[in-house]
Image (tube, rainbow, N blue to C red; front, side, top):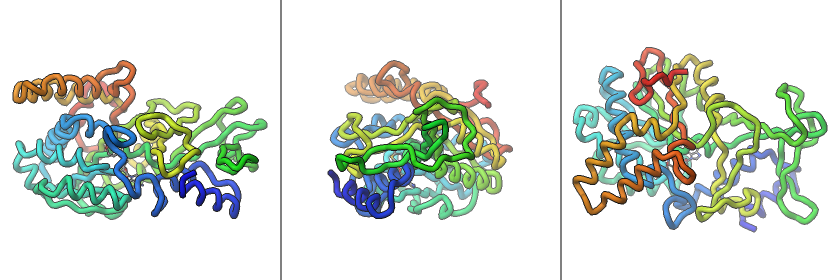
Length: 361
Ligand code: SAH
């Protein structure tokens, strides 16, 4: 058992069962032993690979997309480019490089990275050493400097902790983590029913909600309404709120039990885009999408980008084509249909590029 696992058992022995939300929060964010706090989880030698790590095209296209959004905003100077949970900093690095072809945009940019992990912030520092733009690191959205802004969040929302409720003895009960008779961490429905949940359900059903993501949507939408701007979220998730346990853990590119070695595996939950959209709209923002990642990347020019790169470096043509397919394809093992893109924007902002094809909801 991991060090964090032992710590969690001690907390449960002291305080009783902990919510799934608290468990996920500790597993990812415990200051000493949380998964993101002291390692680089990405890439072939790590635990998982994200779109910006698959290909430079992903960040480059988002950089050019941001320049177009900035044009739509009326070319504010300065403009904040903000990334939530930047991982290795690859997306922002590729975006800034591609944005060089729009010098006025580049000159107006102030970059802010929202990151809680000191280890990853250090890697981001290294990645962006030569980026040639002013960059600040902050721990929360509230710390981002005021003003018109473009926000990007790739595989960020899925790292925020979820609460789960399980149907048990005809009541919804919050799902908790406890220590079973064999001394292992185990899930169970909590004792107290939650009378405020009205959803219908059958014995054993699980519903999820992500309060941290809702708080973020409220805060972000309120800011966009007041100060102007657009936010793009890309994540693994579903477009319609539904029943089911989506908590999953990954280690060394394989699925593992989320309770076995907390702190040593990545734990995520699917993003409920419909729920995110409801919160953003309730706070007065416009929402576009979600649309499939593959459709979004195609609409903003990934096919042309792959072709241009292949012409420039023909010896890498197969690699670019393979990456393009992995990002846009909708077959098993490809990301194009599983991942979704959604926009939250100021209501006065025109329809952002890539979302103008009847994608408004
Ligand atoms: N966007 C990157 C990394 C995704 S992993 C990519 O696509 O490769 C999730 C990232 O979010 C990590 O950088 C992690 O440290 C960060 N993170 C997780 N929870 C966070 C929180 N509450 N606030 C800010 N960053 C967070």
